[in-house]
Length: 155
Ligand SMILES: [Zn+2]
Image (cartoon, rainbow, N blue to C red; front, side, top):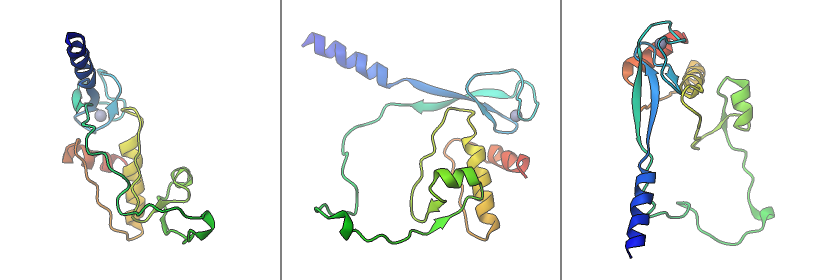
């Protein structure tokens, strides 16, 4: 019993690792570690540590794929409608997505801090918006100023 409690405490502390990133105050560039000068905008002492929150996740209520009924089907009976795709205007990104973003789909883009996720997505939505498609940039982490400065930097 005591052994189990110790194990629980150990697991709990393992799950509560705080993730941090280092973000430039001036331009919003992010880095995997702290540095004195931002290599993106050239400013000194503007890189600040940002906590990304704990990585612990509740693993309750994990349910199935919403909205689809499960039944056995022959692959030949599955209708193959050609999904509409939206080109990101970045050929390599489109290629990885299988020809563009599928309308109504969700794409999860992962990578280490500083890998260029925000920059890639901002360029992609700018390209899409240029063709008259409405886009919405939602951020739970960066300030409006950081996003606006990155957008300015990318023209
Ligand atoms: Zn900077």
